[in-house]
Length: 244
Ligand SMILES: [Zn+2]
Image (cartoon, rainbow, N blue to C red; front, side, top):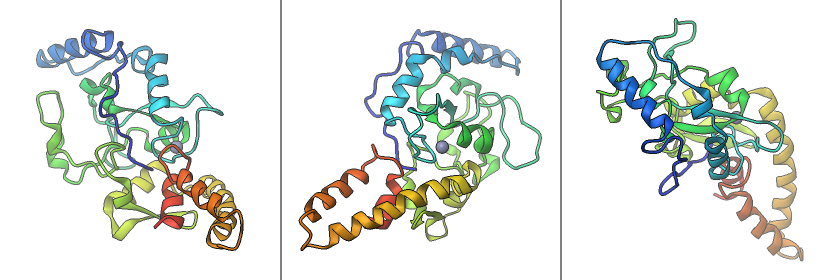
């Protein structure tokens, strides 16, 4: 996981001011204030191809959680960081409704993710450090909520997560790091296997980079820098193992 920066990006027209998403959000807010608690949310709007494409480009085709390159092998999901329809703060509890309906079409709440991180792990989980501060409508202040799952933009994942080879770990005992690993399945076996395969190749490249007598050393060092950029898959693993 690495930070995704949406500063200055163009919001897709369907979600921007007076776009369909914006108009429906305003209506839901009025409905909520009039006592309505059930909302229909349209995947045709938040999952519109212009929205997904913009997120894919911004995230270099990578999942916002596991950093696997998704876009060339799968359609991927438009994931709501704060769940749109209802939320769970703990496993095996009933879904609490409504969810964060007023953020269903908010671009800042949307990220591109792989289907496994989103559908098999994160689902509707949205645990908080302090449940008494949970915001239940657009009338509350989101800044008072502190999510236990790392926010892909508002948090800096490298403060909370680290790697020992291919194995992801909470950094310095970070509770948020531990919860993020658990709730998005960042330590799942298939992901570990895929990262290990990549890591072992990188270990060989690192030996070339460190050996100044090797004519390929300079090129290997330069390539490592590229692999540590946010545009590359598993870049936090590369940074933690080879670029610190
Ligand atoms: Zn993923």
